[in-house]
Length: 313
Image (cartoon, rainbow, N blue to C red; front, side, top):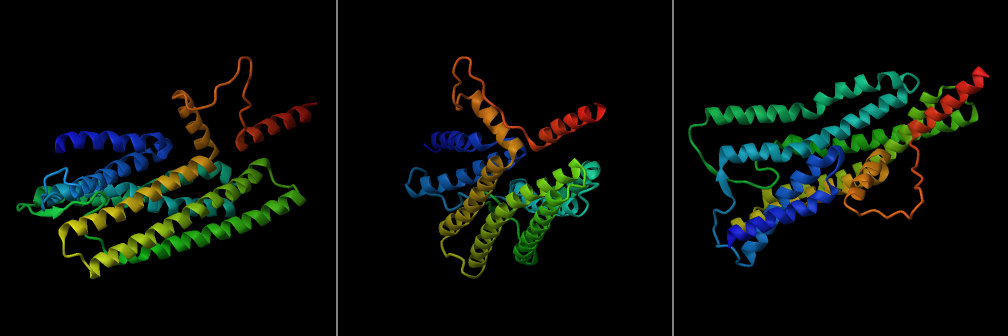
């Protein structure tokens, strides 16, 4: 019975995660829901007595659990540093909007190591532990993380996110004022105006996403502190509560991904194209043509070409 339900869980979790898994957030959407839902459904099966009750059901070799934990929590830690990197990048684009069009790709490449630095260190520590360990222990292996968490890192996450939120708010306010000034006195180039417009749009999207992240971090911190100071006496109750906290992170990542699909034009268009491949989009009538919306960059290129023709005349 356990083997049959395990196959069902694998298909069910993959089926739920797959329709939303797209673009560069696919690793976040597919891996974490797959692992988190698997743990949650296992718990429901244990509650309804479909599986044989085993108090060591969630126990695993400590080294193996540490490796799985590093890979399982890496997308979440990527998300944390990605928020910080995008906010700093948009702030630089707001300050140096007149020259940023030429420097945006080198700046983006410089921020890539920031998002993966801590993850690379944790994987290195895990691999070194694998070779050095002589004794094996059994530990509770959660769907997201089971490694010890530094208390300082746990407490600093919310202030950092509040700082990101404040910096995004400043970026949006200043960009809005610059946009108003550009409309009154059009002096700068089209690329400069495009950077201001992009800051307005990006800061609003990240503004909403940061609020979601702050709420999720606050709930996760509250649950972790509750487990630290009021641990449940029953091992199964502890596992259930821990998996509920992990499921909150799953909801956050999917909510942020849906927000980006709705707000970011490139991701929105890619998602629609992929849905059309599965027959989810509206069918066109014979002879009817759909008008695809132009992106901001294409619109600027068309205007530049029109202006070049006028200058040549």
